[in-house]
Image (cartoon, rainbow, N blue to C red; front, side, top):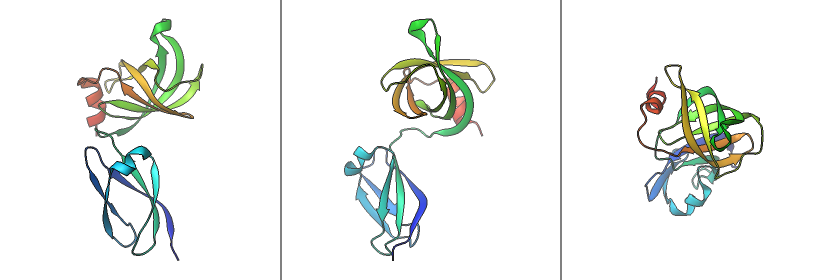
Length: 162
């Protein structure tokens, strides 16, 4: 009988054509092509071991840069409307290209594709403003990419902080 687990195996697949999936139960490694998995994004997919029938989940991570877990209070502003507040947010993670947000209080519905200003504290305690494009909106979770993705020392300070 197959055992299942809530364990998630994270796979980093950026620029790879194949990825090795290793069963967390018996250790069997199997190499599979990435292309059929690309449509799944970085969401979780069920997997079943061909040796021991163990069922587990894999999380496909196609990100180019490491994401650092943080907990920073911030807000989204509408620059086109004189910086009108759009939502209070918690910055949950940050990378050199973007952020993961948790919406805590929104003035309106957020939509994928819109560009807003994210304001949040720097590692030194000052306020940083970054234009962001909302890439995914799933309930209170928002994935946003920095519009200007050139190297930013203030972002790097968060990503590289211990």
